Length: 338
Ligand SMILES: [Zn+2]
Image (cartoon, rainbow, N blue to C red; front, side, top):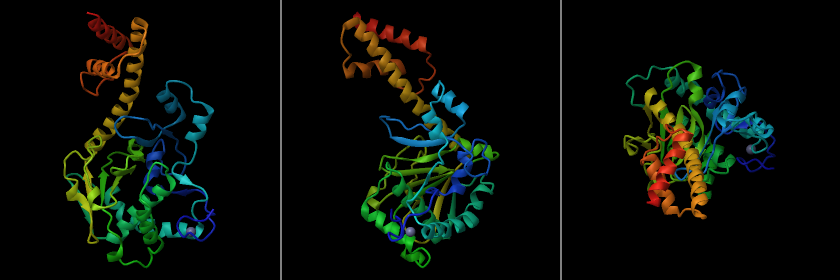
């Protein structure tokens, strides 16, 4: 295997994190311990009709089993013990040094302005260190696109990013390509454990490309025409996306969302993801009862009508119990028999 970055040397490096380890580490560890690779994660990717959102979050085996509602299989436990967001034999050792040379200045000079500062009342942070920040963000995007099958960018964009990273030591700030990007910082208040409620992962929907990396969320666009606001569980609620998009090589603007907004967004993701599973269950229950009575499956339009009846058009359907659903389903079918 040839290294994806230099395209020359043997890809001999093992355990390369494609999302910077020191950013995501606190999220992946169960107790937020700042110790490498002690966390577990649980891939709760799903096929939702909304956004195919593919994320991992720190959890222990008991928590994994609690989420599954049963004992975890050997395969699931094995998967949970993999080193998250790292790859073997994709890059070479020399290129790993390039990654480190991009990551270190960000971790040392930029990160403390977020994690070690009181951000109360702060809506945005403007960073004059264009080169440091931009290279760091591009590195996350490019490596994710190389390593995650669901995260895709055009060949032209990929090559442009690759050359920028390869030449990162010598490139001038003004020569870094200007792909529009938006960064949200999710203020995380509390001890290290608070970070474990954050997410790490990316969307597979290309419109836009979103990467959650713990307390940082990157939205990346390949050109200006692609810029659009996706509400995304409240991430872009205030409709000021364009004001915070970085399109030049002057300075980098980072939007800051207060801790409560972070909790609201994560809460919505959890709730609505769970709702998808509930909806499948409701449809199954309804279809079975319908089949028993009428000897055939209900028409898709009727299923939609049924879901509307059950949920009253709202997502907050977790309040229903199993008995409640059966009762409501019977009520709906009864109304169709009249
Ligand atoms: Zn290389």
